[in-house]
Image (cartoon, rainbow, N blue to C red; front, top):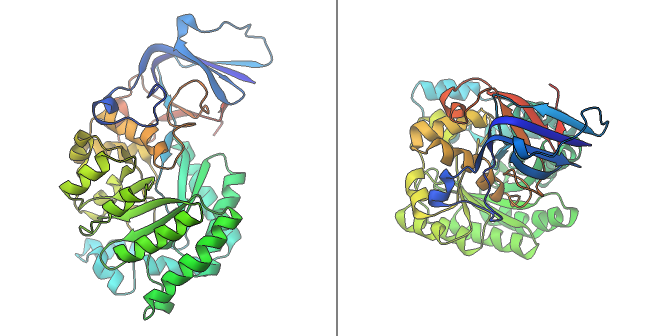
Length: 416
């Protein structure tokens, strides 16, 4: 089946001309084609150009569908490279406590935070977790996210971490959204190992990572390296195990304090290092010289009323900058990439063009998929969103609602 989308007011390709990312000033070049069109064949983009030059077909042909996008923007589907959307329970009570003045760290010290969600997730079976996450993915897709990374990290036992990763594996086979799985066993120290940090690191590195790699349950291994969580030394041990077992690397770093762990991420060739609210100038320089993406999480800073990552400095340094939702029950209960784009523009001083690049092509690079998704280029999968408006700049401007009129996933025009 072929699909021809034509007459787009703006066809926003985010083309990188074969490169895997855009950096610096390149992020402002969205490769816009006025009155644009594209042809999809067998789920992939076969042709891109102006509507006047589009291939002509007999509209009665049974194997060709023509969609008229007149007055609307056509652009790549969003890629969300950092989510924790497999979980059980809720933490609205903690939100209320933060409204009364308690910090995220103070709540965690009282037994809340990550361990609160761990208790609920441990008590929920794989089938129910899959059902909860599938519903969340439905909502992501309706808001234009066509690819999403999903982390474990709310089990913190071998059985429960595998349960989460198996649920994610089920979703990758069953759901329309493309799912990339990440093992985050080093999310927090489980209560059972409160007095045995070394024992838990040994469990992760000697048992869990090798098993996950053998079974193909994750593409990446992540670590929360920050004050009160895991140290740089522990992070390096986990990275070494992941690398020796053929898994890619990601890192939570510099969210709560400056750790220096960005150096480790760059040295090991991690796909991304995420958060970076407290990143140093030296670390910015390291990222600028590396292929490791800086994944910024504007919704977290907004929701927790904390400092934002220095997006302008990162972009101007030449680092690969992406944005993600960090959808999770504690620090960002929002899956909306359109909202993340607005916050990135208003609070992090990114331009609309930079934010769109960060939410598409560069976000795909942060999970190793920019060769096949994240831009509208010949040969890539046809993951496409069609906006209600005629200008891409309306995306961050009209915030709070859903700006998506239609979604095309792997070449199929979806019905909601």
